[in-house]
Length: 223
Image 1 (cartoon, helix red, strand yellow):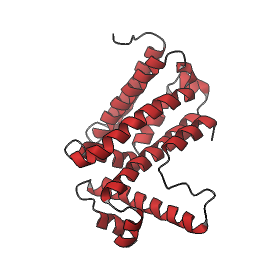
Image 2 (cartoon, rainbow, N blue to C red):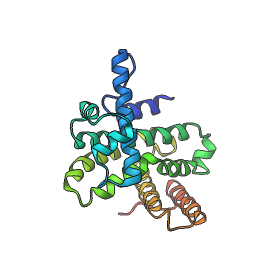
Image 3 (cartoon, rainbow, N blue to C red):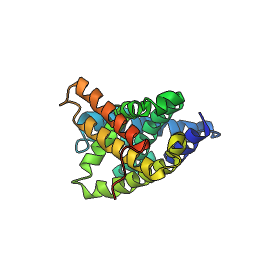
Image 4 (cartoon, rainbow, N blue to C red):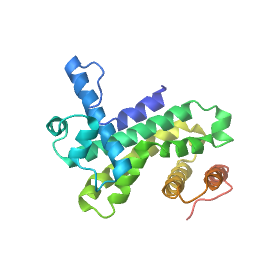
């Protein structure tokens, strides 16, 4: 993994999940946390936020509720870690994909849009989106979710431009392109069961074409 990917992921890595250099007991503890987080993602994806209880997560994880509470004392603590973990895992998929692109694919074919789309089809992003929607009507969840989501937007913007050097001279354009792509693709994910697969592909291509026009100066920033 290159320096850019490592730096971005290091910023996003959830607290308490770094097992490198740790003792056997600490590594076991890290693995238990990951098992709990993976179970929480499954529950959010299959049952939704309202029906996802700590008891259900513990059952899916195959551990006692007491053992889970040892690692996450409250549901709020667990959900905060789930948010961090889902963002981290999605960014891992995205950065791995972008890193493997040739310059021509990244610049001329806008292949990064397809990689971003694939990262949004993951179960991790499905769980993240479930939390984002639930936060609209749940003030307690919103208090956890919104500050983290805003922080991720800022950290992604600051670091990911390094992965797209063609935007280096136009950071404002890159910020707009990133926001536009995320908004468009997230909306596409929400409507994925409504629109035909062909239409989804066309819309992804249209997003890529629009961003390419912005980079070439054929579309201007709003005043």
